[in-house]
Length: 195
Image (tube, rainbow, N blue to C red; front, top):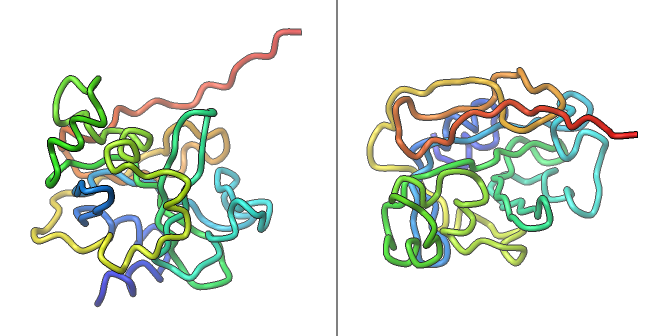
């Protein structure tokens, strides 16, 4: 079964299939170690597509294998791989990876990283290490950007997603057990409004 055919399946299966894969952009390659699944309209309130198609999320409706990039908190880019069948929105957020190629380039983009394990730990740091920005939105990843890894990825662990207000206990965050590049779990805590 090809990677693309695995990405066309259910979003949870696609997320697991991405672990251990190699992603290359901006002269850097990372081995994916942590991802989060987001399903389509209505069924997943944490998904950008749960209220329907918008100009921002239209790429999430397929076909599979394309990059969905969004800007968050007015300062960070996050990268998702579109999954599932065309017409039904789903995507997998790439949360963390190990830099396995272009290490010096990644270090130059992430000078605040205290160790190589921190270079692409977290979705914004991963995008920074890969130099992924708004112009990467809609890139077809199966043309040399995304490929299966050489080795079996190891034990996969599932748990709640990070920083979401809806369906936060859904165990759709997947990571490689014991990998030092996996980000620390932080449950979303809503801010209290001051009246």
